[in-house]
Length: 538
Image 1 (tube, helix red, strand yellow):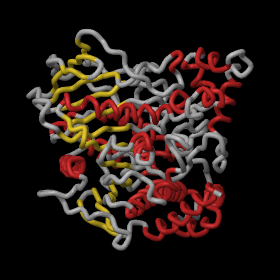
Image 2 (cartoon, helix red, strand yellow):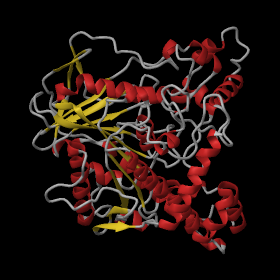
Image 3 (cartoon, rainbow, N blue to C red):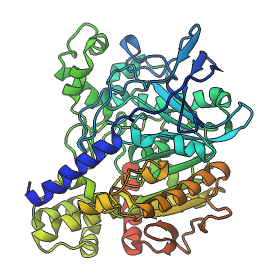
Image 4 (cartoon, rainbow, N blue to C red):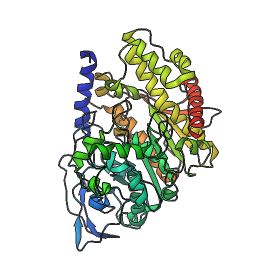
């Protein structure tokens, strides 16, 4: 790797470590107990005025360990007395993230959620926003400091962040696991964890001043992927009422339970390979042998892939015919998604975060990669995203990744909502903070998260302009959570998406309405994605 490429990546790692590390000490005080279904919980207050109550590490499902490894989430056992919820729960076991942020405590006993509320009583019925973290369904946690929900709570919502099982713990399938399931399927345990968390919200959020009839799910990257899977899952219907997908969606590589999907083997086949690598395939009881393996052994044998271009087994939601009935992209195309308002968007420089994983090093490799991935549409894409010399390679690769993997799928999601009564609102985030400008990353993948949560860093990393944009974005996100529409008094006009006008809201140095973002490339990718869906169903 060249020194020119290495330097910005190292600096970005440092910035992300600071941004994503566990939150530092706050002004805490114990808060009165609240009654939820399994028992009483107490939290703490934070802020100079102690205006936000925080409940960390509330269990929403039984620990998925031992016999419950690779089982759907089970109910929490009731407890006696008051459970103090002042510390975050463990993160699901995971490999060291390729972007370099610090890891929290790892443990398979990880099914916990966190609640931030400024409500003074249980009667307030504030809208609820449930955050699903990203990380490629392989890394991350709802307790990362960048997801602190205090600022959103101050704006009038009850904010919830959740954990879910990741990698081989959340998405491994195996024929024997399918055999022991009443539905005859396996995998998707992480997806079912998300549904269990939403069921917890429906049953318990009123105790925190939240309205169980006004729930917004929102997430970024793999969290946005999860949002879209929840939008087509029969088991999640009625558990949420708006959805926000940031830099992720329904289209692309969707692994099947028992059928090959493009170059991806069936998930049951991957499970058999992992069992064989661990020496469990020849055991008298292969499942018992698998469940007896340590988390570290399972991670080592499964080698979960990270990022868009990482090597290893790619874990994630599986088309199983039950909780994910069909290819999610096809279900959106056919209008089978839940009829809820959708906000969806992308960032201007998504691809820069993945430059360290760039699978090609020269122009010839770039052209070969494009022709291999996009077949009949490759020459058009090479015209739209040209690369004629090696010094153009990084910029071309980043633009191609940004548009084909994020911008075009976001527009298609918004367009497919035209088949429903509920509106869609499309955005594009272009603001480059001083910190990211310094390392040449642009408005990279995940850059918008700190603006949505209001967790910006002090100057010089973020300056007053960043805070202005953050306030506007938070106001739009909260308004959408309250009403299903980001428009309101004092807010910038944001038209609902229409294919005829192709308008979107740009959040950049200025906040304005744009239209026809990468129109030619998006039109082409819409054709590519549609043809891909057709091939996958033939």
